[in-house]
Amino acid sequence: MLLDGLKSLYAYLAVIPVIPFLLIYFGYQFITEDRKKAFRLAMDVTTVFLIGCVAMLLNKLFDGSFGIYTILLIMLLGGGLLGNVQFRKKGAVDVKKVFRAIWRLSFFMMSVLYVLLMVIAASKAIFFQA
Image 1 (cartoon, rainbow, N blue to C red):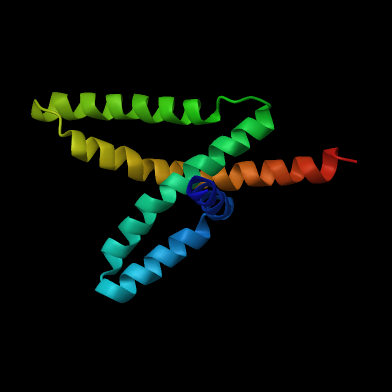
Image 2: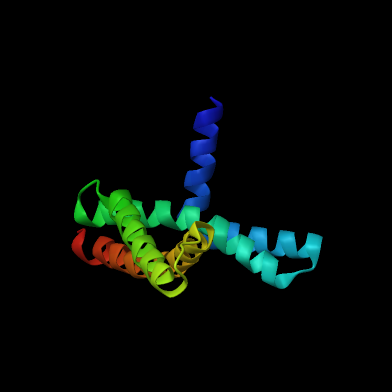
C-alpha cells in the first residue's frame, strides 16, 4: 500500500516536473536563503522526475519499452567520455565530479527533450487521432 502511494506521488509529480522544481527551490531558499544551493538542489531532484517522464514519452511515441535504457546508456557513455577527458588532463578520475556533471547535464538535456517530446505527443494526439 505504501509502495502504491509512492508510485502515485511520483507519477503526479513527474507529469509536470516544474512543480517539484519550484517547490524545492522556493522551500529550500526560504529555509537557507541561499539561491545557488536551492537551484542546484532543485535541479538534482527534478532530474529524477524528468528522466521518468522523458522515458515514458519515448516509450509512448516510439511504441516500445526502451526509453529508460536509452537514457541510462547515454548517461553512462557521457560519464565514460567525461571521465576519459578528466583522466587525460589530471591523471586521475574524480567519480563524484563526473557523476555530478553528468547528472546536471542530464537535467538540461531532459528539460529540452521533455518540452520537445510533449509538443510532439500533443501534436500527434490532436492531429492524428480522429
